Image (tube, rainbow, N blue to C red):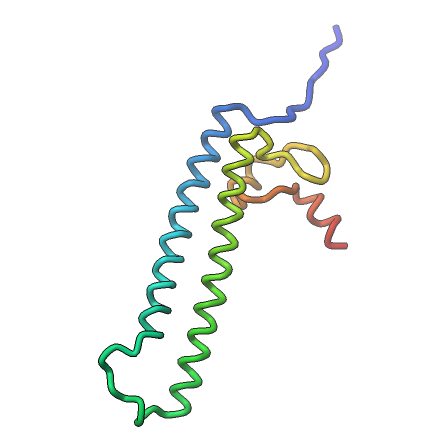
Length: 130
């Protein structure tokens, strides 16, 4: 008796729902963080009623500029992450989520749980880095 084991090429609706919940939660967290950073940057740029323009020290200005730059970079990374998560939700809806864009193989669940927006298996990612 020959038993042919067919390799799974797509995740089930139930499995996709699990990933959708995971991604939605991460997306909400990222958006919350992004909003917090944007508000903090906005408050830093708002001179308000503080009249210290003449007594500003160059060292403080440099540190403030550096901190704003760091916050802006963090905001940009969070925005990119949020966009990647949104794209992953689209892939869930159109049935392509969890399939490696390079090999066409199913990305292991463990990898998707760790990096839910990934589009590559570890093997494909490592091959591209060579």
